[in-house]
Amino acid sequence: MSNFNHSTQINFKEDITYAENSVVSKRVLEKSTGNISLFAFDKGQKLSEHSAPFDAMVQCVEGKVEIIIDKKPYILTEGQTIIMPANVPHAVNAVERFKMLLTMIKGQ
Image (cartoon, rainbow, N blue to C red):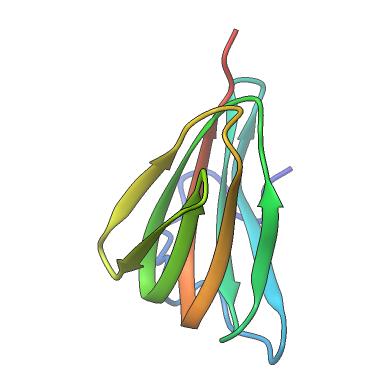
């Protein structure tokens, strides 16, 4: 289920809003082969360490985020991207308010 309709222009910076002390998400596209989701994190919000059985790509759309992959921290700012490999622990920490596009590709 998607929060966006097909053939509709999407502005990743403007089409999701921040909520105080929260993480907001919208599904852009959902298929059996993977999902694309848009997130807005308020400063200080996080996703605790976890792993997924498929690769995931984080694109920072706005702000600043710390992505921790296998205990190693990476700082991303607007326009930067990182790939989180399948089955490797990772976490997300909002250094400041930030928006990200998360693309998950399911393996076979």
